[in-house]
Image (cartoon, rainbow, N blue to C red; front, side, top):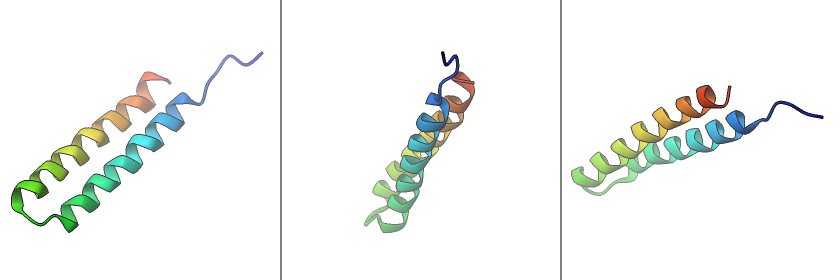
Length: 57
């Protein structure tokens, strides 16, 4: 029976991909406010991605 799970890899990769999408949102944003929101999303999702790797380790 398996005692380990790959949740850390899946969750971390998912959040990392969303973080990259937020960074791309900064590039295509039309206004400075939208750039700031995209940056905040990218940083927050990046922090959560690192946390996901550590929580399920």
